[in-house]
Image (cartoon, rainbow, N blue to C red):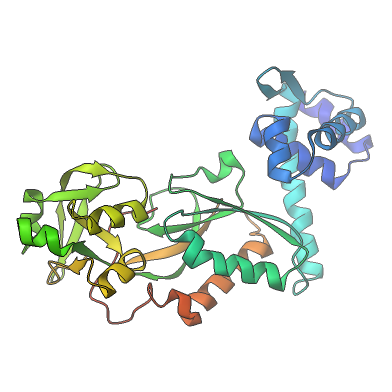
Length: 322
């Protein structure tokens, strides 16, 4: 099947847009999902697929009521099509390395402080490159970039082990906090070993880490209030429901007006960071490189990031926040 398909490829007149569309459909698992990723109508996506199959003389996708599944030929052709598309994009960048970005950039962004602290980066990127379409999905869940068709993601905290390629764009600081009302009623932990005796506000079943000099101390907090969103945990902490370990950008306003108080400050959490992560590839796309460079630039100089980047802060973000 592979040799037969290659012979047909040699005689076919293939359009790059048709190849890219096929890769999106294959990765998304259907025309509807791919059309949303590409911001095209389903009829346009279907026409491109039919045209490609007609040129190759083989069926690439088996249409079902649930979507589309790759045929044997389609599975073989998908990797070729993806590689060709990537090579052509790399060639375009070589020819015009400093020109306007074009095409589409699909980004996964944390819902906790993503809209307030990272969206200015995307707005500036769109302003500088008017031919670039930017599609952002804000969510605190752990997004599978490859399976869900994202070009890259902004991730904050401690990165999980994976095959993704990460570029650090700046530090993230944080601290353990509680409301004055909670402290008055229950006191506050003096050392990491005291944390287990307090009501902790958590994302799930994560561990909390603190620095005792050069030593990292890990504790297992316990609590009845859990949320997969850092903003919600900050609200709960301000309401006096317990202690929370959160990034400064989420607690800054609460602390400044006295609604939250830093506690156990002799044992800060280890430093965290923000990253741009992307799937592995031989030729990282220029639009991702430009996004990364702009993020680093704005992280250092934009006053809207002052709540996050505070040299000399005695805190850091512990676990993966998003």
